[in-house]
Length: 114
Image (cartoon, rainbow, N blue to C red):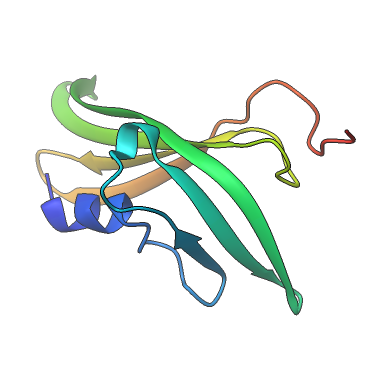
């Protein structure tokens, strides 16, 4: 597995800082890290809380060959302008390496009205 990609993900440096900045204690484990995201959108600066978790590292069978997949997720905290969870994955195929992310929203409304 490409440890550089994992390291960038663990410190939230895989997103363009012009769009999103993350503030967190790097000593907290990725499995349960609280983060404050500063989101830049159309000239606005929006602050939103998330918690990382769901960290896993395993082997999957893909098209008859083994594929290593390292993954983690972020779940929105109360007060976030959205509600849900996003899952990220780094895939290492036996012949090449690719990054992949997939959106997996949790059940619930897209926007909280409370």
